[in-house]
Length: 237
Image (cartoon, rainbow, N blue to C red):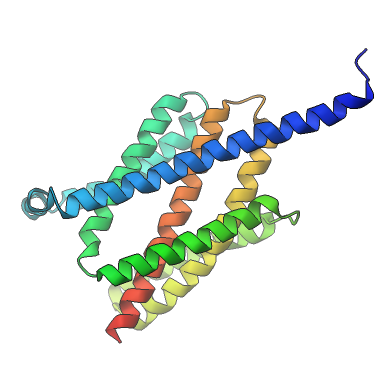
């Protein structure tokens, strides 16, 4: 029998060490994805600007491909990460590259100051909410579920506003999107911590880290886009 008094203490330390390693890996993957997107956007706007703009000018339908492909890759990562971490990591990097190209295509509508302010704001909010989501003892699942429902409603409203073309409504929607992704960021951080604690023994830790990195990466870029719209529209007023 191994019912020694020190066993439970050593187990807690081991669990905490494993959790810290998991979180470090997850945020490392997420940070790498953000850096890849930034590099992809920079290269698209500078080195490959003429080639990319010329290609999309001749093949405008390909814009839909880079808009829809990340959704397919995201689904692929969600279903295969625990079985094929290497393939899922490659898909995560491809998603980051594609989003970088998308950012480059829309960057022309904003100033460098807008982009810098949006990045700093989203980074500060993201860091704050991930720390809160990781350390808080409060169950955020109820708030997360409500935020997901609000996100679906907001997406439908965005589609309607594509026909209305109201800048004022789009401006308001950007603030709502920030609030939604603030909640989702904290919830996703807490959720991935709980998923690791509950399922790490039955699943690939690397795969779980990639799934978490994808979720948090999507939260970050949506915060960035929302802040970018807010700062861009504010400067036009």
